Length: 368
Ligand SMILES: *Cc1c(COP(=O)(O)O)cnc(C)c1O
Image (cartoon, rainbow, N blue to C red; front, side):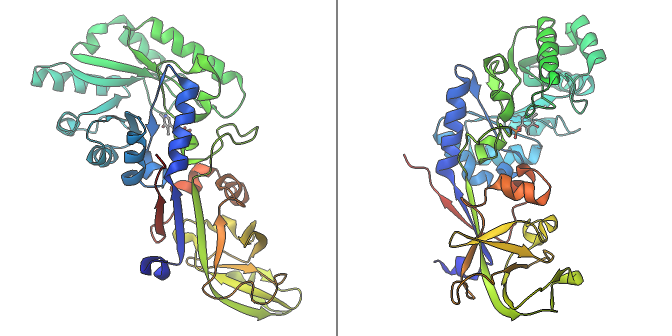
């Protein structure tokens, strides 16, 4: 083990081979449509600087982020990629888009007008993606704005609309809303000039070919979150989190463990204290919830998760099975991200995007 790993409380292992394998399986599923990779929020916590080059080497040519600073971080490691920025056009930042060849996703008529005006000052047609809202009511042209645009296409003169896109509200559920959004998107496309179209996120891809259009935008599935929560996970797990045991102590009734004295010891036993906490993204809502694993044996979390520490009941392990310096599995084959999320009352996305800055990170490179 490296010195840096020895100093760290916990070690996060990122399997880039699994990320690439997940992208390839989605690419094959959506072909002949193109498969982008959504890498917002530092590639869902896994690290843009490592994930993007691995996916680019595997043939991914389009990357999607939420914010302009994220787009610049992608550009820095992927000089030739197409980069889409979902969050639109921050005022006064137009030059950053053209200088770094980043495509703004224009979300309302105000942004369309701003991009058009900027294109006019440059005397050239400028590329963009335009977001049509079909029911999310968050970003994108609403029905009234769509009517205005369809009724006056001069509003996009000077803009090279490369992609019309929309976003599903309930992609991971089997609801009528998916068909409604599909219908609204098709009808919008019929009223607008021809360009490529983009509809599906990870779960949307599993709605079938009618949802694939020209460009799919998977995020979570690349990183191992189950895009089909009603069934088994078709994706490979991509991360493993192991944290160090700091101390093992003997306890007995009527002692309590941790803040708030929420865990009452019922009988003679042993508590191991582990070097991970909510400051690392091990959510406080995991207090007293779920099991971590010592050599594959489940060990219940007891008491509150604190900023830097978690306590687990190891009474049932033989003496010596757990000792200071040893590692316990918090996320991994025995406890996948979606399981941790369910135990913490959240979704896999939040577990991934909360992964802490204190972890020592180890990247396993893709096999050729
Ligand atoms: C985050 C995001 C995605 C990716 O969604 P997943 O559910 O992670 O696959 C796709 N499109 C848009 C507009 C997004 O905001």
